Length: 255
Image (cartoon, rainbow, N blue to C red; front, side, top):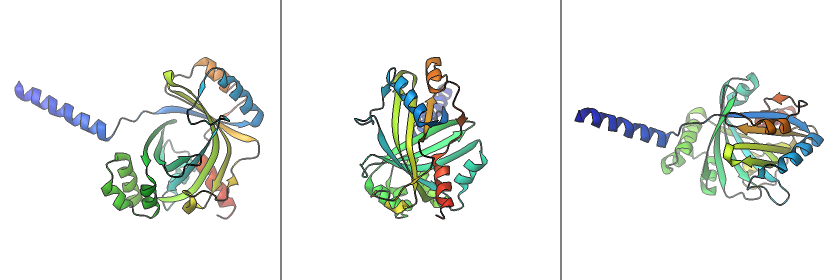
């Protein structure tokens, strides 16, 4: 009997360690729509009356998002998106506004139409080591599991920074239901990946003028009143990928 209890405790301890090192991933719905300027303004006005804005939002209700996307040498991540594979993932490093000293490493995974995002913070020194292709050094110095996984993928899959995607975002949240709605304007792409931490690079619009992106992110069921606001039947759901369209925009320019 004592042995059985001991074995059970060992199993519970092992399960706890595994969950601590590799947290259970929660997949969420992520519905995307391409909107015209007038449609986006109408939706924003209605959401402002019932939801609170994200804490990142500035005095004008927006904040800038800067994302540096990585892909393998053979561009397999981009091709997976083009093929519409049900299971795929992307690595990116983000910073916000004018602060180019604190970064977030993110791994975004898509599975059967749902998304899961894991993230951790990076210091400027760590970012520079990654850009300097010293991921083997980063691997041994860090205790952050997600960063270690990135280093392994970079060393074995030869990840490279491919494109910078910038845009202005307004985000609405409802903490009680873990609902998040984002309005992304003026999406652009840049090829000067080496200047990501400095800024000042040339940006090229990804979409037609006056076209933007609405994203609705929720766990299980989207409340009816939110659904009626975000889509009155005039919008068509799309698998919009900022990364893919940014790469294609630069490719068509010969970059």
